[in-house]
Amino acid sequence: MPIAHEFEYARPETIQEAIAILNEHGTGAKVLAGGTDVVAGLRDGLTTPGILVDIKGIAGLSGIEREGGILRIGALATFTDLIESELTKKHVPLLHEMAMTVASVGVRNRATITGNICSAVPSCDSGPVLLVLDASIHVAGPNGERTIPIAAWFTGPKTTALGSAEIVTSVSLSIPQEEHGAAYVKLGRYRGEDLAQASVAVLALPGSEYRVAFGAVAPTPVRAPKIEELLRGKVLGDALIEDAKKLVPDETAPIADIRASREYREHMLPIMFERGLRAAVARLEGDGPVYGAQLI
Image (cartoon, rainbow, N blue to C red; front, side, top):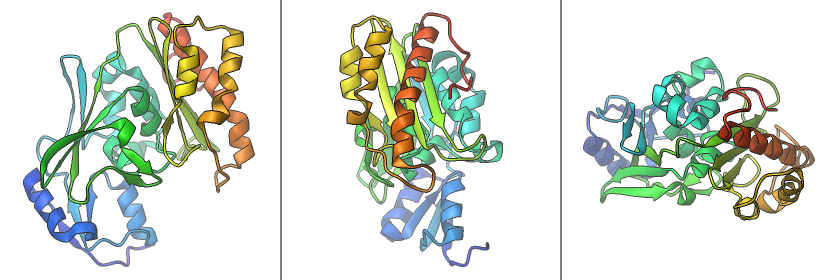
């Protein structure tokens, strides 16, 4: 289906130029990075901007770099970049595992992790993973630069804390301790290009500290503080896992939609959580499935 909506197109060379355009056009402007969501929205008539602001020509927004104990992901870094990065493979393999589940090779070659969280659909793959990694979102706008913690980023379905004339410049996170294990479990209708019916991210750290987050089962991706508190400081065992699984309904609010029924999500979530938790702990202990292995 062709794009029938007419719009202006701008390709600024600097952040300041891009912000000026966004500030001038307000809600009538739309930022274009990878374009996998924006172009689909234009094609389907779901978004009708007056101007499309292409930021791909702005220097300094690409790349994945380590700065001391911080991993910084540029706004134009694609999911393929995450998959191929030796930094993510070595220091944050959870990012690598998550990126491998996103759509298809063609989409991963263009789609960016920042675009994924800016679209803010409840099923976005990056959301649960960035939540357990306590990531920060760095943005620039008319009033300068600011940092938004991922915990405050998602404000509702398809809405974020990003201002109308602001642009995400990068995502950063503290690199977990060398001894850590993690897992991302994504449930889909089939292998290939599909959004999550449900997802769970687990990070296991030394000292029996656990971080857990869910996706596609609430208005936004969500952390699971009750489960984390129950598990904190305890040696993992069958009885403890069963107690933690009983808390999953308290942390999530799944609905029925085109991809799955509420009942199916409610049934699968504890199973996914257990598999993710066991895999994360096994990886922490130097065992378990390799990152990228199918867990569900």
